Image 1: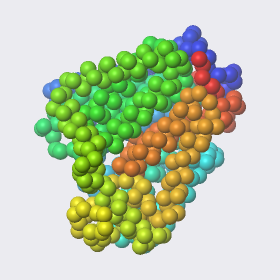
Image 2 (image 1 turned 30 degrees about the vertical axis):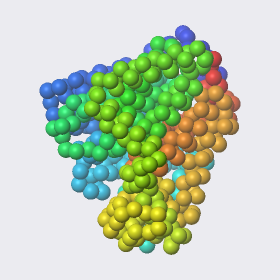
Image 3 (image 1 turned 90 degrees about the vertical axis):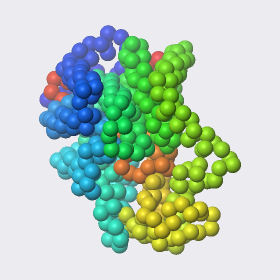
Image 4 (image 1 turned 120 degrees about the horizontal axis):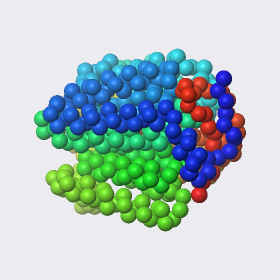
Amino acid sequence: MTSYAAARPLGEPGAEFRRRSIDPASGWGRLCVAIVLLACASSAVLDFRLVLSGLMVVAFGAAVIGLWNPFIGLLGIGVLCTLDSLATSLLLRGGIWRWNTLNYWLLIVVVLFLPLLIRRRDARVMLLFLLLTLLAFELAWSVDRPTGLQHVFGALSLFGLLVYFARAARTPAVWYWLGMVNGVTAIGVAMAFIGQESRLPEVNPNVWSHAPVMGVISVCLAFAAVPMPRSRRALLAALAAANGSMVFLTGSRGNLAITLLALLALTLMVPSLSQRVVILIATVLLSLAVISQFPDLEARTIGRLRILADSHETARRRTSGRFDLALGGWYIFQEHPMGVGTGSFTHYWVRLGRREGMSTFGTGQPFAAHSAWVRALAENGLPGVLLLGVFVGSFAVAGLRRTGRLRVLGLLVTAALASGFSSSEFQAKSLWYLAAGATVLFQLNPRGRRRKPPAVAAGPASPVVWWSGEDAG
C-alpha cells in the first residue's frame, strides 16, 4: 500500500527536493530527453517525417506503458501532445479517422479509468461534461456529423489527459521532467522542421506552432507545481524562452498571444522580485538571439503584426478573414438562437452569403469557424456559448480562491483558453493539456490548505507527496 509523506508543503528547494528527485523518475526523464535530442539531431541526415514517425512510435509506447507506470505514461502523453499538430499535418492525413488517432487512445484511457474520473468531483470536470453532453445531443440535427464528432473528440481529450495527470501528479519530480521533456521536444522538432520546411508538404504555421506553445505551457505547469533549485528554474526558463521564439517565428498571432501570457505568468511565479528581473532580462535576450538567426521568418512575423496594428487596413485583412467568420457566426446565431447542430457551421456559412458589415471573404466557399467561441455560438446557440464561457472562467475563479503560484496559474488558464478559443477550435492539445494539468493541481491544493487526498494509483517506486499551494518564498 502506498503511504503518504508528511503532510506539509514543499519548502525551500534544498536537500529535500534533491533527495526526492533522485529516484527512477529522474532516470526516465533523462532517458526521454536523450532520445528526443538524438532523434532531432538525426534530422540532419534523415527525412523529418521519418524522425517524427520514430518519436511518435516511442511516445505511444510510453503512453501504453503508462497504464502500469503512471510517470512514464505522463511523459509519453506529453510528447504525443507536443507532436500532435505536426503529426496530424504530415503523417496522419486522411480525414476524421486518422486525424483522431491520439483522441481514440485518450478515449480508451477514459473508459479504462472511468471510476477514477467519477471520483474527481471537480467543478471544471462537470462543466466540460455538461458541454460535451450538449454537443453530443445536438449532433442529432447536425448536417455534418463527422465534423461535429471531431469537435466532440477534441474536447473529450481533456478527460484522458486528466487520467494521466491524476495518476502521477503527486510525485514532485514529474512536474520538472514534464517541463524538460516537453520543452526539449518542442524546440527540437521545431528547429528540425524549419531546417527541412522547404522539402516538406506545406503545413499551416497556425497549426504547427502549437508544438512550441506546448513547450512553454509545460514549463508554466512545472513552475506552478513545485519549488525547485535556481539552476533548474533557470534551465526551464531558457527552454520557455527558446520555444517562445519559435512561436514568434511562425507568425501565428493567436498562439503568440497565448505564449506571451504564459511567459508573463511564468515570470510572476518566480518567488522574488530580483529573480523575476533576472529571468525576464535573460528571457528577452535569449529570445532576441534565437529570433535573429532567422531574418526571413522574423520579417514575415513583424509584417503580420504591423498589418494587425494598422488601423487603416480592413478588418478582414487585419484578422485574415476571421472577423468575417465571427460576424457570419453571429448572423447564424441570430437566425438560430438554439444552434444549428454540432458540426454544421460550414454548411450554413456557405449558404449565408454576404451580410451587412462583411466583406467578400469566403463568400459561398466552405470555411471552418476557426474559433471555438464562434462555433459554439452558431452551432450550439446560447446554451453552448454560456457553458463554454463558464468552463473557461472557472479556472480564474479557482485560482482566486488560492494563493501564490496557483492563483497566477488559474488566471493564466482562463486567459489562455479565452484567447486560444478565439483563434482555434477544440483540436489544440496544448490548451487541453494546460487545463488538465491545472485541474489536477487545484485538486491537490484545495483553497491552498493541506489535506490528505484520496488514494490514487502512483508509479512504482515513486514517492507520493502532498503539498500546499503556498509559495515557498
